[in-house]
Image 1 (cartoon, rainbow, N blue to C red):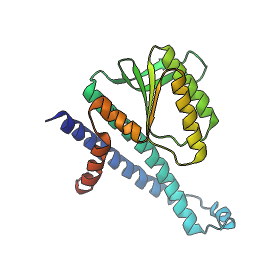
Image 2: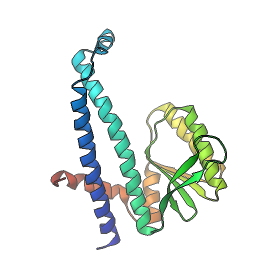
Image 3: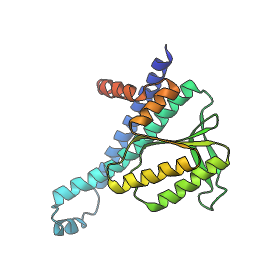
Image 4: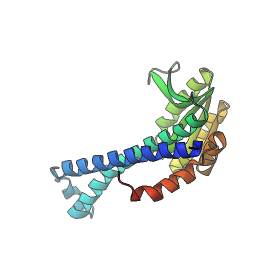
Length: 213
């Protein structure tokens, strides 16, 4: 089996696991919500949203939270699989926070030699505190002797979130780190690991519907 086929098999198994767990999480939450107090729908109606539509919004808001969480975790693990195929010693590590009191440690999603990767599927935050925390994280990584590199596969759509990402890019560049987002992120993975993760995920999405999970 070629390296690409082995990686694809690993990521396919990972996708099956995440898909199964996500479906179970959704079904369990829907069952829980059947017993929910819906008195807040009165407020929805004041704002022009009837109870049926309000219930749909509540359900999909819960589904969305699970979906975003699972999407991020899945894509991070898939990217790490690609790195480990090329660099077997690549791993997740924690480093102490020597700059501020909280958090006590910062996690590096994937450490490859002296390169510390932060892997995001998408970051649409508009919270200014996010900038401060990320600045401290990047400085800690640099002080630990590593080069911080941020990989974000999908870019945000809203103006404020885009501005936050531009600031984060500047933070990385200020400590001689690197920042890759959107198409550049997929290309970076391909360049460093010889794995075309983007194409691989497209293939998996087309074939997984016909498999028994």
